[in-house]
Image (cartoon, rainbow, N blue to C red; front, side):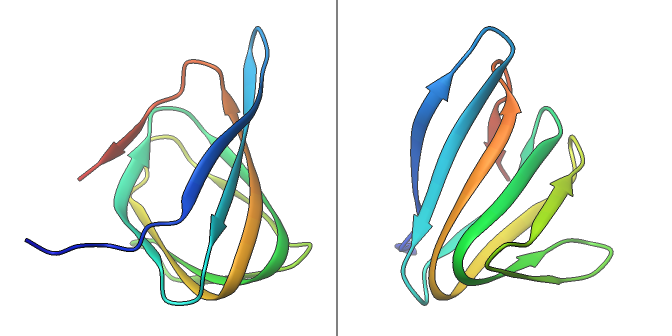
Length: 97
């Protein structure tokens, strides 16, 4: 069984309609292929990661933002110690493939 060094997900705030998660990871960590039941907005605060999606990869750097469509498969590979905020619906679920 493969052991993954996954980025840490922390709930920062949960409102009536939306929630905010903090994603932190060290260089080399990764989040395997997954989907989110609702659209998610990522706002990068520090460093760099590679967002892998079926229609092309996207380098995410500090101050970048990106909208990940609902049900779109994606993975995240941390290139340099990374921190981002993710905004999504309060009932959104992350499902690993």
